[in-house]
Image (cartoon, rainbow, N blue to C red; front, side):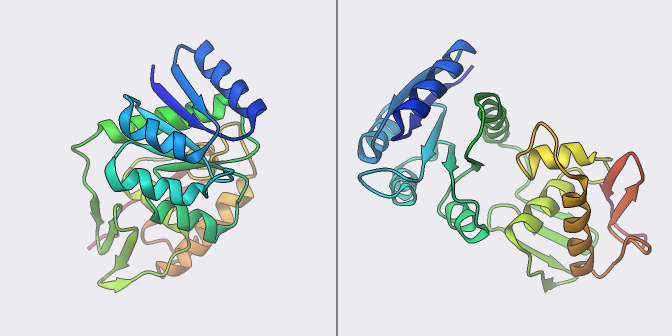
Length: 227
């Protein structure tokens, strides 16, 4: 169970989340303003912060940068902003994950577990190489055969998820849960379209795969092409 700080100005959401997470055994503290939240984040003993962007005193992105200036505590952004440029901004500002409103307490708890698993794994490589493909997980950059890949935020997340599981068959349901934050299912077509875009940037197709291989009805796996 985790010690969770919720920074959320909407009283109904704040109290509901705090109550639901506490029912699951978490130690929860909730505040309604950014400055008070930043102070508690850097002085308290929390495992993770859930930070709303639309706060009344300062913008949540500024609050995130203030926390990041003095602390490495995992931060999950809760936002109604689902535009890709907004998501890139919060990730570049130091967010560890994000959820898009509306979301359930169960969904948030799943994201908390995932963030804490990652933060507790200090031995995992931050630069992953598979064949001629290199992905820098910290810098959010990737290259193929020495050539930089221009990926969208979602394409980079998809590629990162696959390279960290090199050779392992991953189901579309796993991809929807971990990359699209849809733990209760979603449209497989969404995964198919993004896989198609990613394949194109890797110089391959579903009919002639090099790195990304799909097994109908089973899932997707990423492997190095034969030398």
